[in-house]
Length: 90
Ligand SMILES: [Ca+2]
Ligand SMILES: [Ca+2]
Image (tube, rainbow, N blue to C red):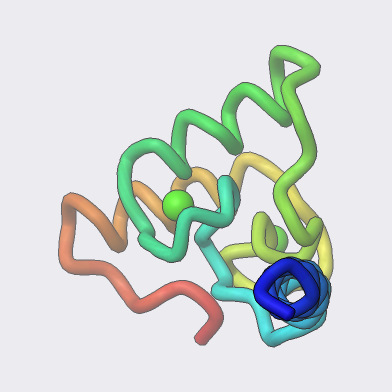
């Protein structure tokens, strides 16, 4: 019985992970750690200029929501983090 429950719990966890992927992303949280920090700036720069991994989901890298991921999103993110700029996604 216990083993069966554990298996169900693992199954539930897997389903939860899948559900999380489908939940609304946070614009600007390019590395998907649920926080918007300088790591996301670095992640975006790596993606754009150094062939790094894509933002997850890709839309989370579109910080200024113009449907494109470009250097302006990096600038937007830097302004938000260090210069009291507008929040990502607005
Ligand atoms: Ca992040
Ligand atoms: Ca953009």
